[in-house]
Image (cartoon, rainbow, N blue to C red):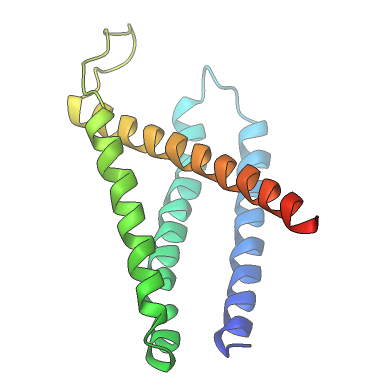
Length: 152
């Protein structure tokens, strides 16, 4: 196995322990607050979780970019697979962008209006998740059907 597997496993365990601890802290802190009267305190308790989610996204992005580098150096042909994966991801995002609509939502009392850019960004994310979910289901069903015919 590759040398980074141990590093990644230790990193995952550390991140999992930190995440569980933060979630427990927020649940305990928010459980003692009244939602209606202590909204600011509740938001202050939830903010660290949002910041932590951004940190996790950053760590995932860095690991996604840098962990395959040693393998590509050892086996340059594996770069083709990485390039195909990146192109497929870009294609999904591009198709999602084409289908996304940035129409304004009707104003809801008590909430600030949301910009068209924010709505379009949310639409792109939702549509890309739907496309990836559909592709995952197709691949799973297709692989099962292929395995059934291979067994005969």
